[in-house]
Image: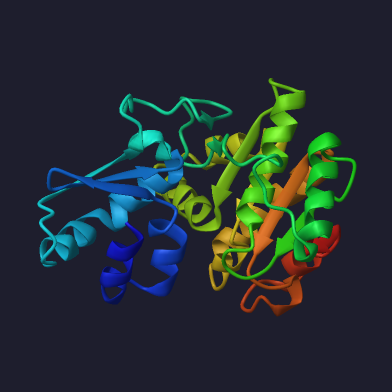
Length: 265
């Protein structure tokens, strides 16, 4: 799958590959490219926005692949007993949730995270948040380049919260999915339900916040959601590829909120 991605790099933007395609686990069997999305929101986004383009790009390659199968799951697909129906490795606050955000990947724990000198502070902060959500380091803002384990640490904290309180409602969502959910809610006249869903969580984990740039209406809604959660002493964890003050085209009041807790790399 990695070598296939390298060959297809000219067909997709760098952000599309990094954010949506590289997280997929893939293997080729009998001319079929089997792809597993780590959670519901990646599956939903790729199906809606990239799958047709991916199928066309793969078909144009001389690689013997004639079909692409995309579903939710984990890399255990390589095992002989792989069952493609459902994914026991996914934790969700509500399996019937009306919005795409929700799933935590149970593979992302502190036990599976590789600790190094460069991420010791971020790891320690995420562990503290997992043990005492809403009371320590709120919000927790984790920044750094691609491949530094930001998403892993964020979800490890979320999984720790659920481990300590199985009834805790923890939602993990990419910023683009938050935007997409809001657009759908506006079109369907269901903004009240949208607000209740995200503001009812015990912890909100939002990935790649820099994608909020220039999305004025989404920034406005997230600002109010942020305040509602913070006032209720519920945990917020944010990741970005840069420090808050370096995020362009995002309202200053949001930047101020991002930096009001602990910022680590």
